Length: 453
Image (cartoon, rainbow, N blue to C red; front, side):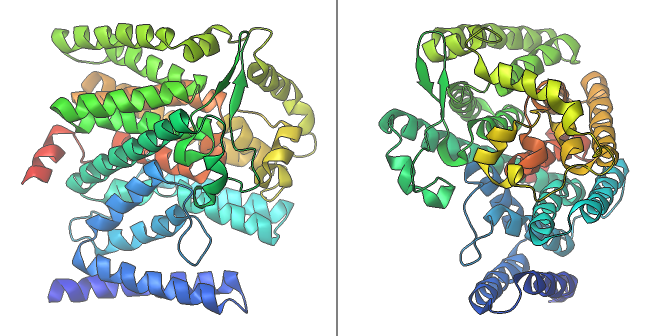
C-alpha cells in the first residue's frame, strides 16, 4: 500500500496542474471536453496505479502505428495526451532515475528560447497551441532517458509493433484502394473527407501512388517506419526480427520517400564500415545492403523514383532547391525570432505548398522561430552525432545500430525533410531514437535480460 500511496502522491500534483492548464486553454463553454478530459484522467490514473509501463508501451504503439488518431472527446491528437501521461508515469515509476544531463539542458534551452520567439512574433491562440504541441513532442525524450532500461526496451518493442500495424494498414490500402476512395472515409486517421487524399509522384514514365497508411503524409510515415525498422533489428530476435524488418522495409520503399530510403542505406553503410562488430555480422550486414539494393531496384515504381532523382521530371527536388535559394530572402528582418509559430503555412497544407518553405529540419526551425532556436536545436543534433560516433566505436551491437541510425538521420533525413521540426509524430519518433542513443543505462543486451526476468 505504501507504493500505491507514493504513486498517488507523485502523480496527483502534475495531474492537477495539467488539468488546470488544459482547462484554462479550453476556456469557458468547454464542459464536454472537460468531462472527457476528466474521464481520460481517471482511467489514466488508474492505469498508473496498476503499472506505469502500460503508459510507456501505449504511447510508443500509438506514435508508430496511428499517430493522428484524436483523443476521445478532446479532438487533440492522442499522442499529445499520452506525451503528457508519460511524465506522470515517470514520476510513478519506482525504478526511474531522475537525472539531468546535456540532452535535458539542450531540450530545455530550445523550448525556452522558442517560447521567447513566440512572444516576440505573435503570441496569439494559434501560436500558443502550435508551440504547446511542439513542446510536448520535443520534450518526450527527457522522461524516456530516465525510465528503467527494461522499460525502454519494452517501449521499443511496442514501437516496432505499432510500426508493423501501420505498415500492414498502409500495404492493405495500397493494394485495395488504388483510387483513394476508402481514404476519404478515414477521417479518424487525419484524412480529408472531401477527397484528394491520394499522394502521387510523377516520374519520367508514369505516375505512382505512394503508401500513406495511418500517417497521411508519406514522408512522415517513412521516417516513423525507419525508426521502427531500426528498433526491430535491435530488439527482436529470430523469425520475428526477419518478418518485422521485411514488412517495415517494404513499406518504407513504397512510401517512395527518398530521404528515408537513403537514411536506411547510409545507416547500414555506417554500421558496416565504422561499427565495432565481428567479421561474420559485418559480412551479413554487407549481404543485407546488397540484397536491399537489389530488392529496391526490382520494384518498378521505386526504381523509377530513385533513378529520376534530380532529373527534369523530379519536381520534388526542384521545389527543394527553389526553397533553399529563396531562404535568405524569406528571412529578411526575421532572423532573430523567425516568421512565427501560428502562420497559415504551418497549419494549412495548401498554404504550405504555395509558400514552399525549406525542406530542412534545422533551417525550418530557424524559419519558424529564429536563429537562436535553430542554433540550440543544432547543438542538440551535434551532441547526438558525437554520442553516436562514440557508441559506434565502443558500444554494444545494439548501441552501435541505434547510433548508426541516428548518425544517418542527422546526416540525411533531417537535411532533406522537415517533418521532425514541424510534425509532432515525427518529432516524438525522433525523441524515441534519441532516448535509445543517449540513455545512460541502456546497453541492449543487459536490458533484454532485465525484461526476461
